[in-house]
Every structure is written in structure tokens, then in C-alpha cells.
Length: 140
Image 1 (cartoon, rainbow, N blue to C red):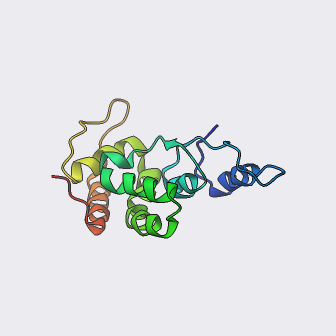
Image 2 (cartoon, helix red, strand yellow):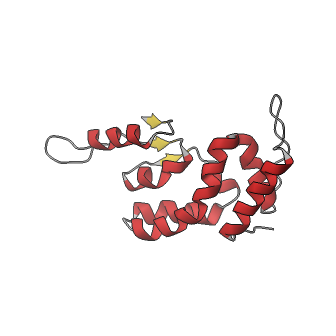
């Protein structure tokens, strides 16, 4: 079962459901499609994610996944919180358009957004570039 919702409260209900009567984990959450809650999802056993961030932060995203899977949540959180403001921006400003702009900002050309979407407005692009710079990401 996948979770595609920006509300962590709904995800926490799924986490509660993962505990069986004997206290054993059941494979309820298999994938997550909400970028700002991937860390708790991975920590809870999500097998994967539909996540735009690997397009502009591939090493960081793999590290978050692997650390969370290994139970090293605190270490994963240190990386995840570096990305948080960018991830939050993506959700607020148009996910696909912002993901392409973020990738471009770190030197990865994903092309222009498909119609009916357009590119970010210049002031939003400047805001995103500042957020990217604050993370220290650079893949060019």
C-alpha cells in the first residue's frame, strides 16, 4: 500500500496499523510518494519512494534511505534536515516544476516542464536557488 498525502498524521495511522496483535511488523507501507515524510516512512519499513529529490540530491537521498533502513535514524535525520527546506518548497510551489528547477540549480539538466506547466517565476527560482545553496548541494 502506498501513501500519497502531505499530512504526517495520516501516515502515523498507517504506522499504528503496522503492529499486529502479537507485536510483529506487517508489511503495510511499501512505498511512499510524499517527499517530506520519506524519512519516517523509510524508518517504518517503506520499500521505496516516488521522490523527486534524487534528481538533485542523489547521494543524500540514497544515504537517507540506507541509514533509515539500518535503524540509524538520527544520522539519516541530519542529512534529511539539510534537504528539508528544499523539499518543503517543492511541495508548495509545484512539485515537477520545482524538481526540474532544483536539478538545474545543481547542474543536472532535466529539460523544461511539459505543458500545461511553465517554469518557476524568477523570484521563486531565486528563492529555490538560495535554498539549494544553503544545503551545499552541487553536482555540476
